[in-house]
Length: 93
Image (cartoon, rainbow, N blue to C red):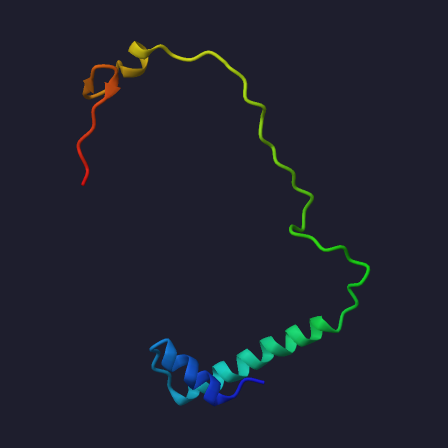
């Protein structure tokens, strides 16, 4: 059970200034959330296997294959600036 003092303590830690109405509201809302979590704890999940994801997702990575690539001159053709066989970009510090 969350008390009004708990809400005040968390607000203090978060450097939040709450009115008395907000403190009462948040205390009530947090207790409703905890009640919902308690209700879930009563469910029998012994026949439900543990999962990391709700859908049966598998990696869809493709196998790496050597393929066609563009040549150096094509790659650097539209470069605003180049130095030897490289793109030249401004120095960033």
